[in-house]
Image (cartoon, rainbow, N blue to C red; front, side, top):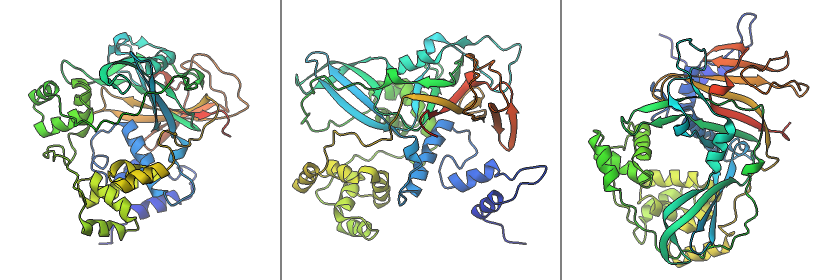
Length: 445
């Protein structure tokens, strides 16, 4: 029998094939999945996956593959999120800027019912769905929250604090996610919110931009990190559902005891992980890692100090240490300084750029135009099917209907639906039932 053609060779052959009169050359979704995610423990399986999780993983995989290049696909989507926490007693604040690749908007569950919106067709016997505007979700994301057990370095005590988030930058291309899925706290079943959320053709996020930092800062917290222990109440609820205790402990730690619902969502997403039921080894940091392990990592081109920090951060595990280094390439010196506890690390951290300064993000105007969206057809993230709609953009088109569900599509303003290998023009794209939306900043050609 002839040797089977490798998946990468198949992909190269298909993508380079010339279009024929009746069918354009294409890459089969299953082939793309085998080539791109064939080595991933979860995405390589036949189980239903979350499109948002896959998107973030794909961007990170591209970033690692491009680390030796001057350009980065990930940088096109990455933006900063500023978190401001203000002590309710001293009224001093702490600011923290974290990177993000997707603006995850909550859908207020109390305003909608549970059902199954269909992104392909509307059935006459389908129950009436609630309708929310996107502004409601944006306000929910930006709403100020309360932290009851916040340690204030100003008062040296725990108490109440107020927290809010804002956009520190606006990326060239913005992924916007509407969190339509949740875990029912009574039945522990993943469900989908029956809600229509019309999205605008153009989006202005100026109201979400971070303003000047005009509040006096909290002093540095010089306490040692407190060991996080799984909450026994949350742990007992998860174990009572029949899940492995070690896995439930991991869920409590991963969500920082945020609550049974958050822990349950983590369990559902990670129950198939290879180490889900493995015992949790208490993290211990020896004074010095194994010199042999340091030498092996250094032979890969890493500095001894970097190898030492990675091994300390990963309990001496060489494989995990190598992954740790690759995942911190953007700011490796600062990450090593945060791990190392000796005098050399403190001196290196002092000599490095101030950790409080946010990284440089591609920033620009806060106005965006819609390029496309991804819809999910099904009752929850464990079942169903995804389809994508992409728009053929024309700068000359200025005829827009305010309602995206009834907007007429001119010859230069069309959406096309991508359903596996089937591609067709979409006369009435269901923009009100999307899950992930892609916007382009208006200053980008």
